[in-house]
Length: 209
Image (cartoon, rainbow, N blue to C red):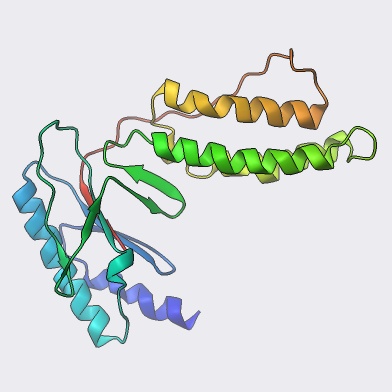
């Protein structure tokens, strides 16, 4: 609690034209614009201000865990060059922030695949608990499905829901299998899963630490 009270003031060191998100010790700054050089300078000045605040308040950034993602849609582009505490910040094609994987094209393909992987593990647990001879009843299985599977898919859906239909379609088998296990339905039962869709996100540069 004391850490959260102290770290909250880091937002005050963020520059006027830069946005910031903070949750616990996960901190990200991001800005958008048409000219990369202008964005690069804006972000770097903000990093310098934040680094100064961190040094004066007894905190320390982990340079190895700090990444930069350049969100864009150009085929030919130049990666930004940013520095933290005198060391270059690694530019990656994707970064995970608060459990959501953001890729440079904002397709969210990798996030959906990551989500599918962890949900399949949860389905295995559901299969064990839903054994036909000694397993839980239907109401309990449905609660477990909502808790272990549906909750993971719902988290961040307002963000990754902007992905294309063929990307989101990879999650349909997860919903189908989960509901069939919980309801004890046959494989031939037709189920329909719905995922929210939003408008196209803006392009920007983000730095996460």
